[in-house]
Image (cartoon, rainbow, N blue to C red; front, side, top):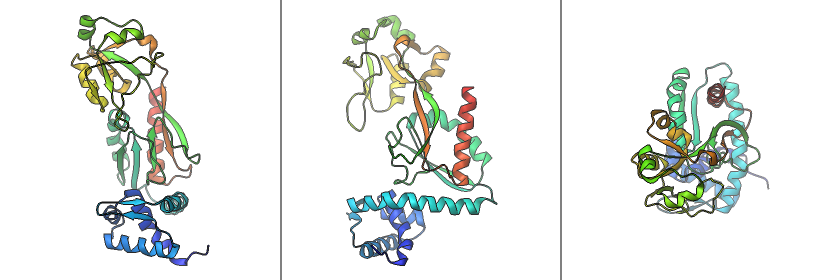
Amino acid sequence: MSLPLDVHRLLPAFLSAAQTQNFSAAARQLGVTPAAISKNIRVLEEKLALRLFQRNTHSVVLTNEGRALLDQVAPLWQALSTTLETAVGAQQPPSGTVRVSMIPGFGRQMLMPLIPEFLQRYPLIDLDLSLDARVVNLVGEGFDVGIGSQVDPDSRLVARPLYPMQMLLAATPGYLAQHGTPQVPEDLLQHECLLHRNPATGRNVKWPLPHETLELRGRLAASNPEMLLDAALAGLGIACLSRWYVQKYFEQGQLQAVLQDYWPKPTQIWLYYASADLPPRVRAWVDFLLAHFRHGLE
């Protein structure tokens, strides 16, 4: 199919609207009016003879044709933007916004303490952080970098090991003194287990123990791990949490390890991005994180 030569000028409106699912948000992102976004997309649809969005009063949703176009265009547009940004930035300090998707616990507990140093070191770089307990479409949703335990199956992504996530069981000394300390996983059936409910499925998350088939029970379930930590510190039961939530409470004696011989092996937290050819602003963020966590593991 032969495309009109001016299609390229309409693509920013399409990409921003596809990422935000909202014409007003896309307009703010590009510094134009919502009417301009709507017009550009309507013209693009006419030129391509495709319906790219389903529209309603509150949001816009990509059609199958729109999704296919996004999957094809977004990587090419990002590669072009990176090439131009790298050429311009070669003679200047890194600047611009880095959009990052990360799992919430790691973001709050492990990354937030590092951010002041990064922002001080790179005064022209802004960080736009999204806490996402899901696998994001890095390119399609407009993120520069993702951090999580599961990588988008897009084989074009570059994934770097960042941090080993250790899941463990913990309870207060007071709770264990009152209810006894489990010696084997089956003993958990006699205890109050503080359960993590997956907000996407509504189901309780299985604890990563050799006996994953155990139907653990407890009077408290929550979709937020930090609430489970608070419950454990209140002596309400045994929690299964990432080490980054509980380490300082182990050191202070407020929490005690439970069934340590049965803890699973650490799961890798990955730092991933679309291409090894990164613009300076993204390269600064990636190198900063890799250097910090590599040093921390030495």
